[in-house]
Length: 122
Image 1 (tube, rainbow, N blue to C red):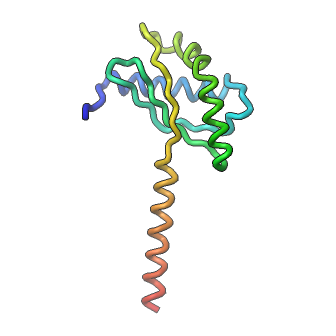
Image 2: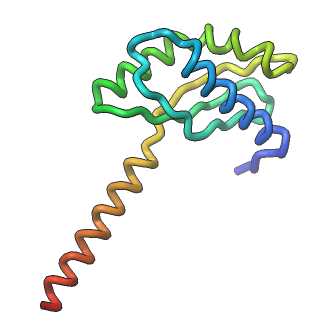
Image 3: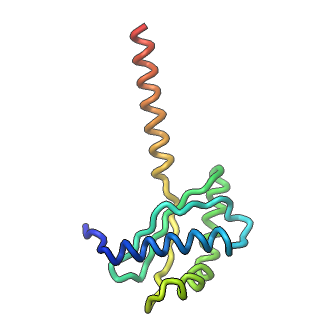
């Protein structure tokens, strides 16, 4: 596995910053809900930006947020283009970031273990 170059990291950080602002301020789709970008990875050739996000709500809201992002993909890319000042604006690919839910699940398991240990001591 190749590590990200400094340039890739800088561009990914810029994309995350600008996309967050665009989604918050310019995206008027009522399906979007409350979206938070967690991470952006950019391919070695700088042509594809993989954007990871989370959103508040249940499974239905997650689905609606994803649909809103997918339908606004070209709009966001066009808005991003003059901000990045690159020869090519990367294609955007959106994926729901499940790592936060996974970490919450692990924390709950740890709490249960500690609770059962305390009950055994008594």
